[in-house]
View 1: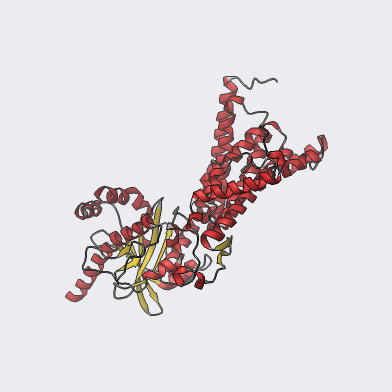
View 2: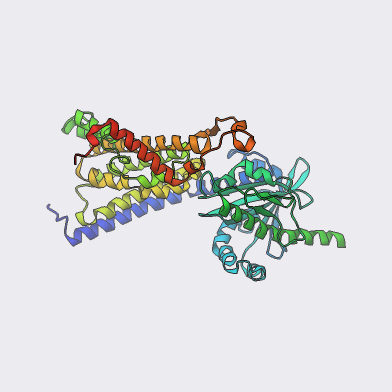
Length: 267
Length: 231
């Protein structure tokens, strides 16, 4: 049977069949691999959280190590009020579990736009953020008897998203450790936030809880004090992004820590 | 799949590794190198040659997609309507890249993380479309498979050469997949630690990749006189 390959009918038929076949192949691949991918993402998150308190976990033992070290998972809102709190094993399907809160998704959906539009206007940003459907997870860890608080942070670097975890000591002011990661920062420049030499600088610095600027990442080479660290030379925009995300996020948790302290004092 | 096709090719016509077919592999390494002679795929050669390990992972991914794309297009070559052939090629390449990415995410999450942005770059890599259009559409799967390997390797060695130069002079280190970055210069040599040496930051920036590729083209042309055009 001779088919005219240049006829419109054949071209349409060919496209339709191709799209259906390719679409089906992609859908099957995506659906069949999804459980594995979700598990990998959750394990990666556990490894990162444990990394902030300087516990090295692997993909194999991440779940078990996480249960061993993380004693409580709390979610708070922008005003520092507790939304809910969980202990014990993580149920991957439980949307209320603070572990399952996807702060990167929330950042993309609401926070990013608010931060960009309000600029330096702190009041506007605070008002809009408190109205937005955003929650802030907090992981309370017990590392060899020492209580540590791990706070996830999300922000924007030069080319794309940056994120990380900041661990505070029991005094809720001193930084125990920090871990940062990025998606597409410039290798050798902004991408260096991923390296330990940069993260190490945060250790044992303190938060300036009485000031508007809780913590700062200063321009490479500028003098630093107990409330600031040196940024990355040549990675100015990424360093600024780290500065912005830490400041914006930690303020929320300071409110929460204060309210916890007040409740204790009243009792 | 490819093995079956090769077997058929062997029976029907010349052997797979005939002299003509061997040239399909050796030519792209030198005489018709995709980057230095055809000047295709330059974009990714600039973007991801800062570290050797990225160049290796990118080369392997391109090699895989090139082989898959070449074989599939070659099998379909008699059925593809001429007027929409570019779209068909694009769909096949994009689908392959997405499948590769999904599989890596599920089974090799650590490698997938390193690859992240480069996956998108593979789809836009001109070498792949170039080979599909110029070779796979007109040839049987066997030769197309060899052509893909040749061009993939031709792309890979340039990427490796450029990334080795850039990483040594830009970061004072060499990195291999799975090993991380190995810094071989003593810390005390660096100016920051009171020494005399400083990494050349320019090497990390994209323009230097172009300069290094230019130097490679220069060396290649001075040795391979076939490439010099007569004016």
